[in-house]
Structure formats: structure tokens, C-alpha cells
Length: 93
Image (cartoon, helix red, strand yellow):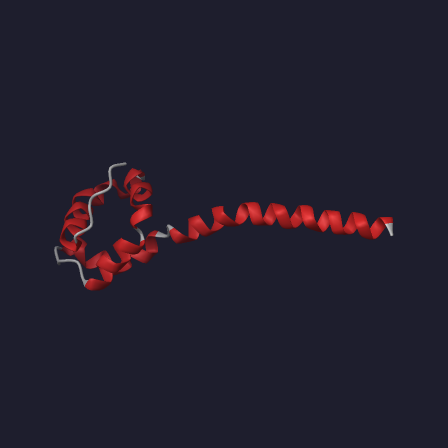
């Protein structure tokens, strides 16, 4: 009886640990820059497509994270143009 109680307690602790980590994993997946691939033609000077605007709207909460990343700084002027063309306010990070 005592060992089954310990097993249940250990299981509950593991479950709580997994649940506590789940939002972090979900957030990391949600802010995947690959989801902005529909905006790639903007790099060559094309206006953003509907798919690009939808991707930007979906990723709105991630934009500051992307813009603060030194790997993406070169795309800042293009990001401003794409956001403006899509009617999305530029984030104040």
C-alpha cells in the first residue's frame, strides 16, 4: 500500500513538472520564424501577399523577439514596410 502511494506521488510530481514546462515549449514552437516564409518575396521587393500578412498577424506577439535577434536586424527595414503594407502597427519593443 505504501509503495503504491509513493508511486502515485512520484507520478504527480512528474506530471506537475511536465505541465509547468509545457507553456515554454508551446511558446518556442509558436515563435518559429519559419512560419514567416510566405513573406520571403518581400526581400526581393515584392509587396506582401495575403499569406504573408496573415503570418505576420499570427506572429504579432513574436515580432519583438525576432526584431531583437541580431540575425534578423538586417531585415528591419523590410519588416517595417511589410507590416505597414499589411496594416499591422510596428511593435514598440
